[in-house]
Image 1 (cartoon, rainbow, N blue to C red):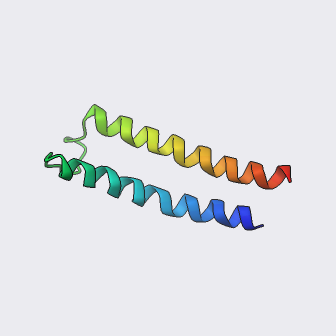
Image 2 (tube, helix red, strand yellow; image 1 turned 60 degrees about the vertical axis):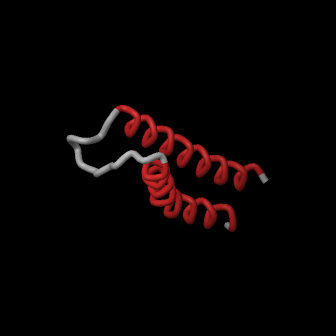
Length: 69
C-alpha cells in the first residue's frame, strides 16, 4: 500500500518538477524561452519525452516492487 501511495505521489510531483528544472536550466544558460506550439524545438520534445519515460518507468518500478514482495 505504501508503495502504491508513493507511485501516485511520484506521478503527481514529477511532471511539474521536471518542467521547472528544464526551464530553469534554459534560463541558467541564457536561452530565453516562451512556451507555445510555434516555439517548441526538437530539444524540447526530446526533453519532454525523456522526462515522460523516466516518470512512467519509475512509477512502474515502484508498483512492481510492491507486487513482488
